[in-house]
Image (tube, rainbow, N blue to C red; front, side, top):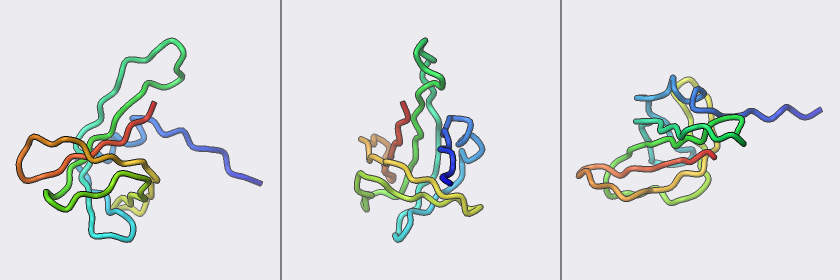
Length: 98
């Protein structure tokens, strides 16, 4: 018997805003800073959204699938992308759900 897939929504992550996720097997930790929610389109069952994270400056986490572990032990497999960061002293990342 296989488990039913879990639909991740903005609400799934809302309780984690301001919290830090540890990247499995590495020295990286990313803080979830914001969730941007796009307007719901007529063909969608859930709106698209983007998770915005920040991490330390200089040592950039490569783009790709990463296991992000929350403080309570919850693990999310997300495709994380480093993005252009204007603010000094940090590196921003995003994970997009559409």
